[in-house]
Image (cartoon, rainbow, N blue to C red):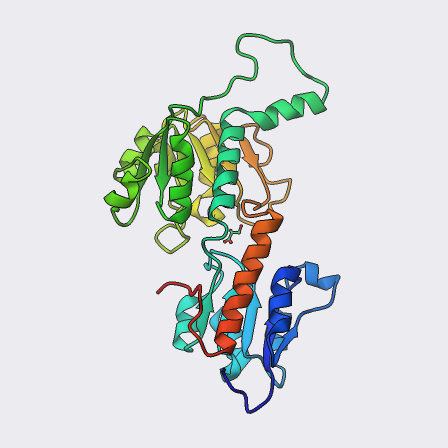
Length: 335
Ligand code: DGY
């Protein structure tokens, strides 16, 4: 057990947190949980408030945060040397300055695995809805402008037998490929590393990125957001894609250059896009992308099932508890 001279370990939870995770934290002996009161807790804690709270005596040993929190060197410095661990309730950790945490010898936790299937199911949902124009169909019914049946009325693009290009064959990429195999799709993947054996289990074939863009009917970025992947889908990339292609982005908004995407959708460089992630989030309804009929946007909800979010909360809590007990985090950020 990590010791604080008999004083309880203190964890700051930056916003409302599912009961499933809170219970685990509260059951842990000698662990004090500080969580802002409702209704404020339903919003992300403002950065300055987080910094101020972390700086206040007696300080915190752990920070349990979310993808809406920016964890940078300045914030960590305000916490001082008492802070030992940062646990995020998300699989993605691009909101955390990992190098700054490592420099300060902090253990870092995230919540992989438990959301893989939930997110993969949702990606299939976005993919089918976008290819088959489901939002446009819902809209004409709601607006009372359901047109008469005609041979090409509401026609979209087939998913079955499509060639699908997955950029980043990690856990979620594999789960998506597995599902698409059931649609008899040809699956191509590109990644920083070739992983032929693993890819073979889902029938995916390695191709260079440019080849993936040129050959795919549906392109799905599933790579982590890094300096290399920021803006990867830009005007040049869209220019290499088929005019009939569909882009499905449920990874991070920053991977796509949104101005270039707007131009590509507007000018018919590509056919449609389905996005679960954007810059910024929330994306205002006045954003030019929202006005496009061939762009379906949903509010970063790929992992949003009650069971999945509860599992994520439990893992985020277990990472904190492991740090409290002086153990290795069960789900440490790689690296
Ligand atoms: C994550 O956990 O990083 C996901 O984006 C949440 O949906």
